[in-house]
Length: 388
Image (spheres, rainbow, N blue to C red):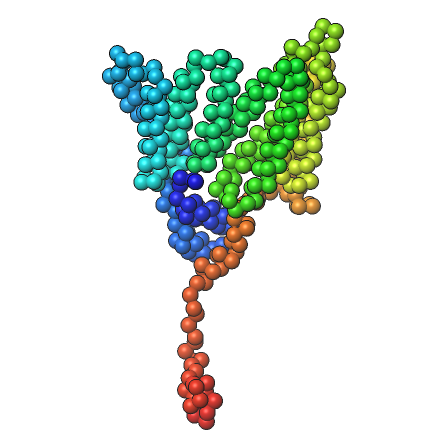
């Protein structure tokens, strides 16, 4: 399914893991060079500055080329038809496949730009096609189409941003669809989103350790982070009350289950942090630390205990002191935790990298020493006769 050269993708994973071992001092220069030669990668992947430049240059070239075509056809009604944008999108997609297959571009900026341009043009064609429909139905149709289109591009090109956009489109599709249920649709929305995002997180966490997802590990990490964020936002009191303002009345200004949502808003970030520490999961830990600030802002929005400047200063000082104390404590590793930067668990751990290095470094049959020759005996060359 993936468009890129699968053997090179595998070799790239091998090289990345070997480079980690080399940086930690577990490999010599000769061993590193030997493995790199055994597992070559033919992709064109420039540094981040060239990648950004190529991305912008590709966008400019496509804009000028299609702008010229549009100027030629401006007197016709063709340029406002869905088929015209579909034609442009398919053309860019063909160019994308050509660049990947024949020019071996991989995260070069060119393929990144072509991915987004082609998907954007195809989505524009669908938007024009559904323009005459009811607004609510059009939004639902566009969100559903974005999910389908994004799933294809994510599976085909393993693009992290496309994966994130697809997940958010799926959340929007569920929200629009469920919101159309009269009466209790909006009331049960937070609980539905909680169930969906919790399931998404568990599914991605389980799938990260499967061989079939070896080339989608970054996409699954992005999905995990988004699932955790949306899971929290689904029960955040400010979000729930803002979206459910139609439910609240003058007599009951708070949304239903307000104590539950307040508890969710304050407690869930600390549950993330606790689970991250217990499971040594950096994704959970960092997401929980980020959401502590969101919980503080939510509380400050309703309860003005002190000015916002003082609140931010207090929270910042507390976090700095906590970080300093933890760093001092973990200078010596304790209970599996350390302050030192270490490489995270990688899918290559399952590929027996040590065996790979040994087999590639010491490949070949060793020759026997000159003074240990056998075969001069009269009985099968074993050296068992009196002539030995």
